[in-house]
Amino acid sequence: MATAQEALLELEDVKKYFPVKAGVLKRTVGHVKAVDGVSFAIKKGETLGLVGESGCGKSTTGRTILRLLEATDGKIFFEGENILAYDKDKMRSLRRQMQIIFQDPYASLNPRMTVANIIGEPLKIHKLVNSKKERDERVAELLHKVGLQKEHMKRYPHEFSGGQRQRIGVARALALNPKLIICDEPVSALDVSIQAQVINLMEDLQDEFDLTYLFIAHDLSVVKHISDRIAVMYLGKIVELADKKELFENTLHPYTRSLLSAIPVADPTYEKERIILEGDVPSPVDPPSGCRFHPRCPEALDMCSEEEPVFKDYGQGHWAACHLTEREQG
Image (cartoon, rainbow, N blue to C red; front, side, top):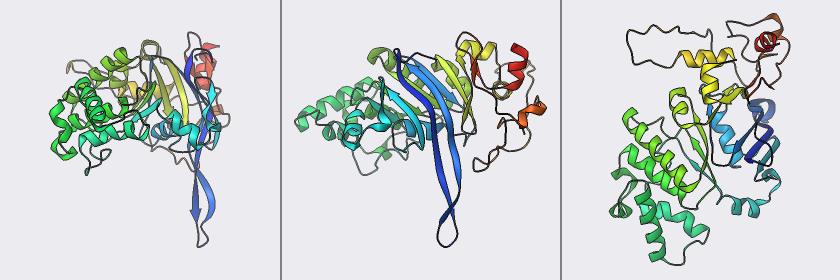
């Protein structure tokens, strides 16, 4: 992982539990362990892809970093400072540096606001403009950066396509000149052809503004295109983390191998071995003992159901939490 000196963002054993209440008195009878001891770091200017099945805790991790959800435990360092210790005012000021692009471009934009107001609202809240004219000039500049026109300022979200709406969401995230952007499945609701356009736009903007991305997705082929490193998440825990080339060429965790086998191949004559996982993802309210993947793992050992594997570095920044890997790598 990145050292504390070079990391823009660093998570240390972050947990987010949601209480499960039952009965007339609504007593807490358990917890949904959505994020359960996640640690990783992101260097300035890089893109870390965070992948996994639906419900594994990816989006919760992103929202916890921004403190849209409050962490249950752990530490989150941004530029070396633990932001979980910040009070409300200090956190409000920090939000200029950390922004989010939401998954659904149809639900994340206020239908009653014009594009000028949607993008201009953060500028007004953080007092970065002194007049409506100044605001409109900045909004027009941002729209140009994401491939839209100044004339679009007066329109409402329903007048745009899904790809255009997501471009508006990108412009809103850029408005405050942030250092970090959490991209929460920003292209999963878009057509494949539009996905490529938005991904290419985000790469261009990253180069121009020296942005750092946490790119959350369930599609490994998309993540491979945009990411420098990839973290694989399963049931609230990171099970593998590596440089994207290393992850694809030297996969260490059985769960990652199953995800890679599901990536479609364009060549119909190419026969690819599919790893079909049996059963459903276990409930995060009562996760399995030992390795959480062991009930579905085709390579599980006896010890996998008893001991939780250690998340360790196997060289060149390639981390994995797997008893089988530990035995094979010695």
